[in-house]
Image 1 (cartoon, rainbow, N blue to C red):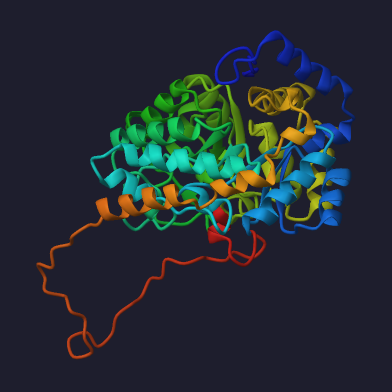
Image 2: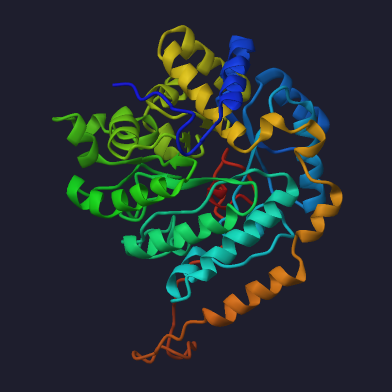
Length: 435
């Protein structure tokens, strides 16, 4: 069954003029430009020559850049928007405030802090500061909030990146974050469908699964997604997470070997997410270099298969020329149908139109340099300080493990909370690809 977008309905809510812009823009595009819109580039270089090559050769629909000083980031985005034929979706990772978007942004709070304290306004303040600071840079798309439920304490992917271990807390705080960041001209991509926090394996480096049965999933993760979809979230990042029991609900008798991560599973993206949950927005993949995706099939096959399965945008090239060619071949070979390509393009352009990008002149797509005064300003630092004071946690040492001394603890294992570098996944400084 196909699930065609309704651009006049939530979350896009376009008027007739915006719908006409979407359709006329699609009608004016070459095949190569249509294929390019499906990609979100990971900008590893701020130089104009690099951006010229990406935009002229691959016609990308979106970008996510490497964080750096706010001035350099803003200028980089300004240059990119000035050169592109169709305005770009510019994504950042403001999970904890502005700090996920530039080096001098404000670290407000982790999701865990915001979920562990009775004051739900912490999450709203995270979103508000994130929205103000990322919008000042010229970003218009946040890869947040995280709506995973931290059921398994051994799970290292979400850990402090989850609002909590109950669907009720996750829904309440995710709505607060969304409402806060939505005060700025920003669309959200909540993540990681169908839900992390069950498996202790990390899809960055190995296949990972959500093993809940349908009924249990529906009461937990399904509840979270229904609530957030109803609340107006515009896009969803699909994780490289398989869900065997959910897939078998729609494909009875599916063999273990045929279980695919959500990014490659049409039954999860179509029958479940678009069908049962009624999501009308845009779906994007998680970072495409992660082993949870690349272990499923050859790159030549998985690039177009992700779009065919129901993803609308593909996050990050591995090799731009190769991946672009794989996507183009997938269309020419019929893996991606005309209907699926057109539907994906409508969702991409509808998201851009819902942000008003189609009616802005190029000079106003990125704020002036003076807007950078909002980055790391005293008011935001005060908010962060107050949250830090409020969310200090006292752990009672009932086992008398403290103090740790050589006399009592001959050996101990240290688990650092710093970056995990994955080859080909953003390189140095990318915290598990920043996703």
